[in-house]
Amino acid sequence: MFSERIVKSLASGSMIRAMFEQGNALKKLYGPENVYDFALGNPDLEPSAEIIEDMKALVSQPDIHKYMANAGHADVRQKIADFMKNKTDVAFEARHIIMCTGAAAGLTITMNSILNPGDEVIVIAPFFGEYRSYVTQYGGVIVPVRAIPGTFQLDIDAIGNAITAKTKAIIINSPNNPSGAVYPEEDLLKLNSVLLGAETKYGQPIYVVSDEPYVKVSYDNVQIPEVASIFDNAIIVNSFSKSLSLPGERIGYVAVNPLIKDSDILVDALIYSNRTLGFVNAPSLFQKLVADHLDDVVGLDSYKERRDVFYKILTDIGFECTLPKGAFYLFVKSPIEDDGAFCDMALKHNIVIVSGKGFGYPGYFRIAYCVSMSQITGSKEAFAALYKEATGK
Ligand SMILES: Cc1ncc(COP(=O)(O)O)c(C=O)c1O
Image 1: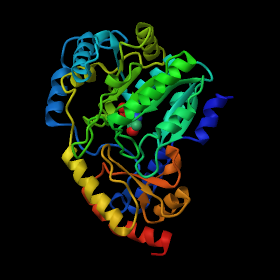
Image 2 (image 1 turned 60 degrees about the horizontal axis):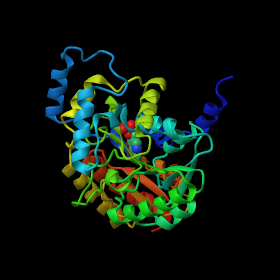
Image 3 (image 1 turned 45 degrees about the vertical axis):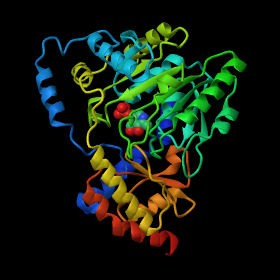
């Protein structure tokens, strides 16, 4: 028979992907223009013209399509180390950077490198549902801690209470998918104190795995603190899927804080994991491409406009939602208790949204607004009808 672990996981597979499939089925039935599909965080914007031009030029570079060191191109790692050092004042060198195939792989190689069976990883709910697989497939145990309702900020006391002798890491994701919350520096400093206390108590490090695919996607001049400057035990996982609109190209990096004890062993473990989990190395051409666009971001104004329009449509109807400060999702309170039932009800109105349960935070649903403005404005009546059906108002 096949792997029991995987077959079991299939049953509880990604809700986002399940809704994505439901959306496709509806589109076949009713035509794509009649379905309001807000399931997937797949940026609708094309990469910039400059990126496309650079891509074309790179295609014919000598040696670009060859195997390389599993950690990636040396010059690319150097450029990223310089960029990180400049941003954080932490002494990053090229040897602390491992190129990987997007944040998903960055998290996967990190968990493979740090976890022993039974180790616990704290995640802040609501969280990107795939964390469950990234942690459990390497024998880890996921420990969700609820963010503060409404603001979705860190509940520092609750995190402190969740730490045990088995806590190996905490994953933070700011700006957050799905809530759009950005954690202020003040809270991260408090979290650092709690972690330092626990490290002393249990005599072992607790790694702060900072999942940062949305770090450049933020609005209203909100300050995004540098996680590597705050936590000595930070492992930064970055990706260009969202910032450069390149999710299909699978490119990102892991940066290991040089202050981590035995950081050279951790780096070797990450490189080993990159190779033996079958990634081998991150896509060669895209490594070279992103190295010259580390701080670029596509379409911020356009996302902000869509955020504002959608937020107004929903709150005018009566939905409760906190205005997100980053990423491109709205995390909205379900008007009925059962958010799964609400998402099923939405399908009858040709609206595809994802239930909060998939993010470990029932009672809410997620909307991905990285879709055309006409989809957003076009969905207004359908949302109003859905709200009426759910509440009678
Ligand atoms: C919070 C979060 N982490 C990681 C990922 C994976 O991103 P990547 O495409 O870089 O693998 C996503 C993708 O949506 C995400 O939302």
